[in-house]
Length: 113
Length: 115
Image (spheres, rainbow over the protein chains, first blue to last red):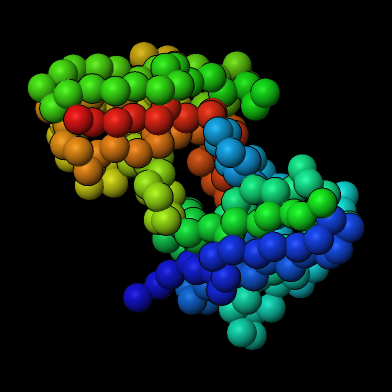
């Protein structure tokens, strides 16, 4: 069946290092992807999105890469800070299935000072 | 502050109780959502309202009853819940349905415990 998933449930990095969080998806019809960040005690917060006609999009300290060939999405965080510690979710949206949105289970990022 | 406010933040209820969760958004959005978040599971969409009309009920048991009196307010009425219903219930809003409008703004959630 179709699914959205994450390669690693947890990731621990040193402050100042770069972080890479990965996401695999299996629905080739998905054409819009979003990364959300959820801090403890809060709801998910939008970080960055990308459409399937792009393979890279940059924000402030974050970059999302999309590889449609292998159905892989990644979130890169530059110079990771303690405030980046959170659970990160990827979500896929399929235009051809009533804008169906599916979330991955999440990766917990821990930043060590 | 995301502009989406949920109350209460925490709720403990027995299986025979009736309670309601409240969500209010101050963003001028037209779509509102209820999601269930359980430990180690992806977010589960429960209900969607677009322009006050329910557009999706994702096979949710009838012990969960949503209500959307206007575009700014959303309720989730709870009745005779089961312990497995214990979870974080998240409300979200967006401009309206459509991929460019699927950027969701979430509240902080209500942590529900059913005893």
